[in-house]
Each structure stands twice: as C-alpha cells, then as structure tokens.
Length: 202
Image (cartoon, rainbow, N blue to C red):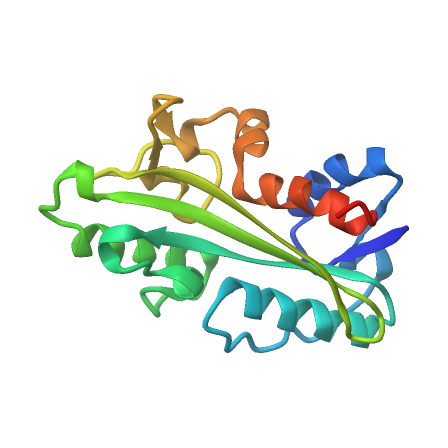
C-alpha cells in the first residue's frame, strides 16, 4: 500500500513512516511527489472534521490515498481551548516562531493565578485516511496528557511543547528526548491506533 502524508514537514513524514513501514505501507510526503496542492480551509469545529476535510481534499487533488492529521492542545480549565484553533490562538505572528511565542503568552495569561491542579491539559491528534474517490477509509485519535506549567522549559519540539509538563517523565514535552517524545506523542499514538483499521483488522 502507498500512502501520501499531506504535510510539508519531513519530520512528521519520517515519524509516520517509521511506524507504518514494518506493516508494508510505503509512506510518501508531498515533496516526494513534487506536489503543490493548495492547502484547504479547515472550518470544522472538531479535529475529526478538519482532518477529514484535509485528507479528502488532498486525495481528490492527487488521485492517491492520503493521510492527513489535525492536532492541537486542549486545556480543561479553558473548556478545551485552544483546541482546533491552537495554531493561531493569539491571531498574530508572521512566522511559526512568532505565532508560537504569541500563542504561549496568551495561554499563560489566561491561566495566570490558576493552581496547578486545575491546569490539566492534553495534546490531541486525529488522523484521517481518504481514498482517491474522496471516501474516508479510517480515522484514529491519540492523546498526550500533562499539566500546563507557569514558564516555558526545554528546546525540543515546537508550539506548546515547552509548557506541557509530563508528570511521570518529570519534564516538559520540550525536554523529552526526541525518540522518547515520538514514542509517547499524540501523533505516534494515533498512527499506531490506525494500523489495524488501515490493514482491515478492525
């Protein structure tokens, strides 16, 4: 089986390939195809809706089976925000680094003064696979739980990684060794949950 991952991020492609390759799935990135498909709008209210929109749009444009994901951070004390709006939560910033800094600053401001036992949160990733005819063939979800600390720590990862403290690891997501982070990550969990569905065993 060939599967195109709808992302320009080579690290994401590598992570997904490492999990699926042993199951006989050949994983390709958009760069491998030389594809330049306009990224669709993602107006959905849930990660599931947005992942499906993206997977179906890319599958139709490429005429290939496509895997797409939507992910973000859910904070319990904020009613699940930033959720599907995680990437542009603050609404400012021209680069990923600027957006990350603004998003983190907004999140910390909203949680200012809140005790640690109320700062529970999780990263969520939903993965959707669509066939070339636009039909959704499989969906899976993964989560990565922790607590939002009061100041950023760590240099690995991106986005909210420096703020999500993982109690059983004793460090933030951004302080985890990259291999350990991949093992625990919401994306890795979602891909592993996808395997039996993709191969017709669930």
